Length: 466
Image (cartoon, rainbow, N blue to C red; front, side, top):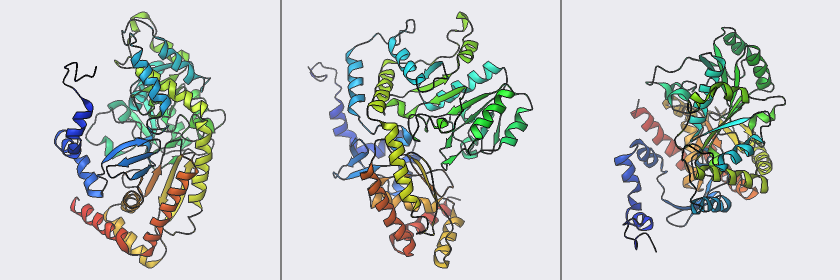
């Protein structure tokens, strides 16, 4: 018997059929009104009807290649059948979930699996998001060390709740939300600055992305190992934020594993662990840290999450890890990422507007820079005078509108496009992206046409909002 036949009055298919066309108006009226405005402005106001793997289909039946993966959430692509089945199974099991006063098996099983990929760590706390995983690490580091201050890197992104915002390296996110936690930013790779701050004796830990999401900048070779030694010398902790880089994104299970001898004290995980369905975050840590935080039965709930370790999230996480192993997802990310990066890097000498291609695995940054020829240089200067980052936006828009490929500019005021596709993409998707990107670059270097017309539109909009 359907829900309608039972008299509940709720029919999801009917609701979407009747009101789905109002999607942009509903957001404009009831949610963040700037989102539909921005999407309309740049021509991203598509109507996507369904998705599978690394592709969307719009209301006209056209396919779109997803090179964004929901900011990294869709590590296995959309609607992987194994994850879907796991969620159907866990719902059908009607488990006694979230009683708060028992120990269900799924959280322990998922923790065991995760820790198998980080054998130097011992325990896991499950929350609901990446920012919550970082919040947990900050709290645990401060309590375990008895020190208040946390160091982070300029241009870092660790989340937007108040604690993680305190270690966010972008002023545009922090502005207007002070006071925040005691913190200090250092430049990525600056060991001298790290040691100088540690000598003050009040540092609980240093939180770092092995590869920064903003701009796709990798920590210099040897930096994480040297930072770890300095931190431990001063009784502070190394916190690896693997929310975006973890679970195979860079060609190893965790990105810190690219550097020998690095064993963070705390590791933050989220995004791809969800399978794209149920929000989940995890903070992995050493036994002594957890035992110091949960030091007695009186402190058993001193740090908890209402929906943390719920059965649906745990089932999704277990299914994700099983698929990663069975389908050799990490190996595919490494192989396909190397192929994509190599083919794009080969274009640097061909296009003067293309400055550099960098990254690891399927986390790739494409940076644009000032051209040499006079005609292109004048157009570049026009864009830069209005707002830095407009050229990258000029590339992103035709990739979607003409070639049906979804990408993103890597950060505000950056001339960098970041590619973080589902980890299941292969040579077919590499071919499609490289061919489309080449066509866009040909257009940009042609000196005229629709691309530069759109650039002039962006300049007018940027000047109008100053």
